[in-house]
Length: 225
Image 1 (cartoon, rainbow, N blue to C red):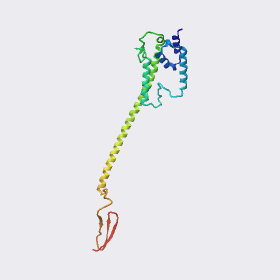
Image 2 (cartoon, rainbow, N blue to C red):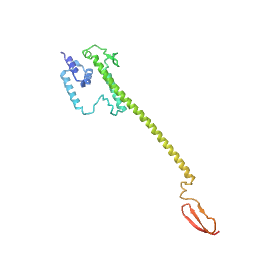
Image 3 (tube, rainbow, N blue to C red):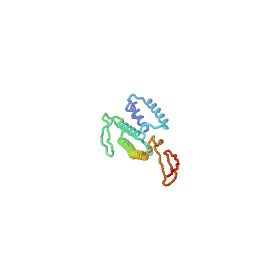
Image 4 (tube, rainbow, N blue to C red):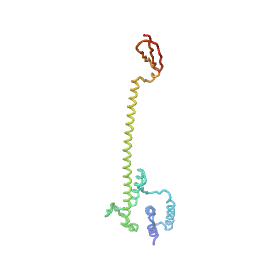
């Protein structure tokens, strides 16, 4: 068995968690010049890195659960990454309709090879179903965010209107207060220095009269009539 076939079979027997690595190897490297021992060593290193990173934050396409908070920026980034990976995995195929699938199938234009023969329609259909399920989950999450955004927008408009109404009420009350102060003579700068005084003189004979000053003092005088 040639070295190329041995490398291909080795890559095909890897677990699903290495699928992205297999795709990258097949697209970026020449399998005819690749040594099996070299590739096994690289894959072993990759597996160790994956095991060490399980406790850390996961990278790549991470779909949010319905109970998690998903903002617009994270959602758009996830959808873009999903679309990018989807296009990358199918870029070597032509469009062709497939019965029972909501998406078109694609077949390679180039020469047939062992790699293409290993890909079955069942595997492609399974990949399409998985991508469609993820797309549906993202659509539902985006719809929930959009509904919440519209709700918050309406609440903000309502609160803004309330604030404007309160400001108008305060403005009217200040105008009324200014008018009332002016009507009773409480003018600024003149309240502490009033002019004139009020004098009450009782009718009759020899009685006392009382004079009230504007500052609150008063005097009594004897009036003889």
